[in-house]
Length: 76
Image (cartoon, rainbow, N blue to C red; front, side, top):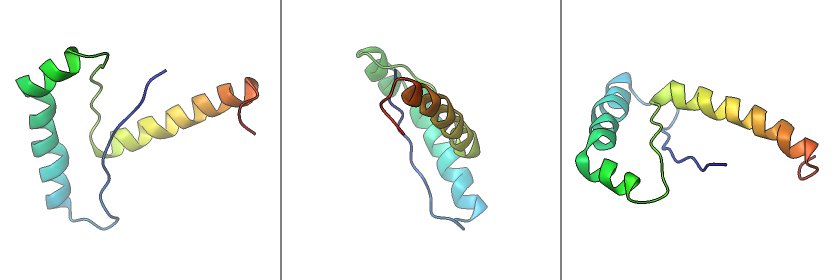
C-alpha cells in the first residue's frame, strides 16, 4: 500500500503556468539530488507523473483499490 502526494491547479489555469509548474519546476525538484536523497533515506519511492498523467493514475488507483476495499468489506 502506498500514499500519493500531488498538487492541483485551479480549472482554467493557463497552459503557460501549467507548463512551468508541471514540466519545469516539478521536474527539476523531482530530479534534484536533495529530493532524491531525502526520498531514498526513508521508506519512500519516487513515482512522478505530471499533470494529466497523475490524474489518470489516481483514477486507476481509485478504481483498483475501491474494488479491493469493497471485497474486504471496508467500503460500501
